[in-house]
Image (tube, rainbow, N blue to C red; front, side, top):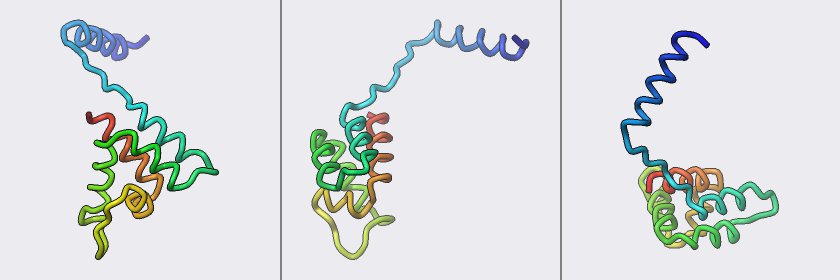
Length: 102
C-alpha cells in the first residue's frame, strides 16, 4: 500500500470515528420504479402504478414535468402524463434522486 493510500485510509477512519454518519435510505418505491422501467415489457401504466405508492415522489415528478424546462403549452395533472412527457429514463433518474434527497 502506498503512503497516499495509507494516509487516506487514516483520514477516512478518523473522520468516520469522530462524526455521526447518516446514510440515505433507498426508497422501496424508487427500487420498484427502476425495476418496472428496466422491464422491456412494462408500460407507462405500470410505471404510474409503481409511482403512486409514494405520493411525495409522484408530486415531485408532476412538478418537474410542469417546470419551464419540460412544460409545453399545456399543464399536466396526472402522473401518467408526466411519465409520457419526461420518459421512463428521466422518471427513474428523478425517483432515485428524490428518494436519496429525502
